[in-house]
Image 1 (tube, rainbow, N blue to C red):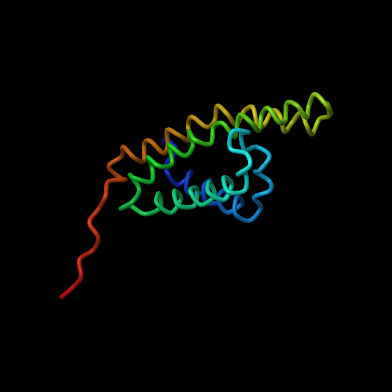
Image 2: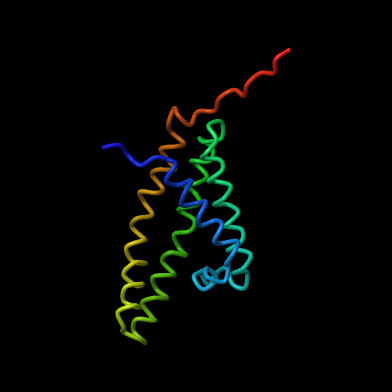
Length: 140
């Protein structure tokens, strides 16, 4: 079975980055308290970073650098994913219904799934496929 490759990250970062810019208010509650009161700026910045990583992974001559940046970005957003799990845990304590329980479960599962995504970015950085290539020369 083939390992997931960088195209999975291109799709995930492309969708998530776009959502960060179009609906930032969705992500503001999961920004860790240490970054308050800059929730909006943090969300917009991470959306731009995700779109930049997606574009970089899609282009062969920037794939290695984008792979390293992607792995770093995924490690960097881990505190927000943990914050999201804590937020849903508090909601579940206040309102123990099936929908809240399902959201809590999904956020708890998401945290360990971050590691395989980090490894995909790292593999893009380490792979020969992601090696910088010379741009085509101009014809004289």
